[in-house]
Image 1 (cartoon, rainbow, N blue to C red):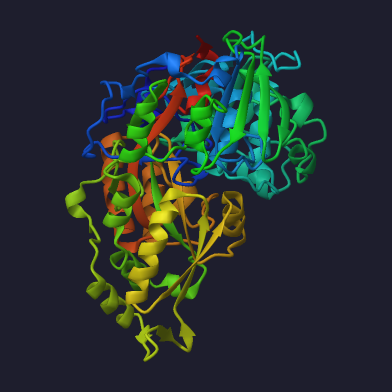
Image 2 (image 1 turned 60 degrees about the vertical axis):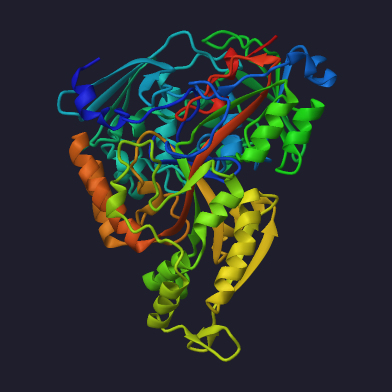
Length: 585
């Protein structure tokens, strides 16, 4: 592999933080993964002040495996994973929640993947090369990979993904335009019938030409799923993705497992791919079963599930899970953060003084502690403390709880307190309709504090508790004032998709010229030290401008029936990416 690869393409992957032990992936390689409720994408800072019985790798091991429930022991070739309900979009091009993504990880493979430390590693591509000028990327595919229907994988299959992302009607979360592929815009926005920079040299060699070298290019081009052209592309034509989307619940890939069936609200059932290029999984059947914050622990106790990724990380839950004796618990720093989103299309939220007032006026520290009991820290920028790009906190406004300052800002913004105790501007009463996924322990902590804190400011806070997918639908429609969500991040800090005015996942209408300028500068700079300086300035701007109310970074907790061994987990690889290594004792 060309040594300049490390200078041009992998500067982003030099992780300076400590990691604990296995799990992550990405939405088109960079920045952020799909949105999740807090119980799905938790995390914590390195200095979280908690004391647990975990070993140096973040594991608390079972003390008595014989206590495992009989119903789980009776399953000799099946593993049941408990998690929030999927949205039923099992397609790497179109999924929008991490729960769908967990299923997708087991059904599809990428050209390249992220390793446990956040660096790149081979997947379907057994090697790659970058030209000295950083403009030509060559991926050499393995010759022993087949789709689950037995069809060999070729570079023509990998080529299809670029055409889907470049389609003028593509409406998924990925944004491949920032990779600057030669001819991409001409195909997407013009009459070109092909993408000039995407070329299949032979059945196992794909070459991509870009117009400028960027720090994120390898991630953008390489961490992409490979789907069968004979299946997904059979009825695909430019400008019409209906036939492709029609297969969202009939997935066909190269992955560790093969799709069996999906019963909404009940299960996603998969079977082992006996012909997977890394070898057949040790377990025959994998089931994803919907659980909630109210049921996930009890379902582990009764043996209805073997693995839970969404149990809230707090001292009470850790103590309870340890006391059961038969569970292995993995606690590790999460590469992600929780936040409260504003609908920036609404005039009241377009005033930065209002956004700052709502941040000063919310007792975030008490909310985070009430929820996590010391397993999370309040944050003030949209970045994990694990990232090499994390800024110097001394340069940031901590927005400590300050109702007086909040009231001052609201007055400055023209929101006057009326005799009825509420604030008005131009005849409009200040009301916040808060879309809250439920059950959700973070929302359970936010709602009483926000209701009381904002009432003291003269603002009426009205929570609407909904099922998680209903909340994401409201967000997609712009039918909300504020809501709580969380982002899972990749090792690459580029936030284009979320915060750039034209970001593919910028659903909330946020726009700031300085943010756009700095994001673009971060993409163009190849030197990591200089990129860090750019991101330092970017986070200072965002800390002032507050696209979100930033809430917390906490620890992940994966809880496993100890009859199951082999899960490999790190902040950079999701548990779902290595299930083929799992064995039943």
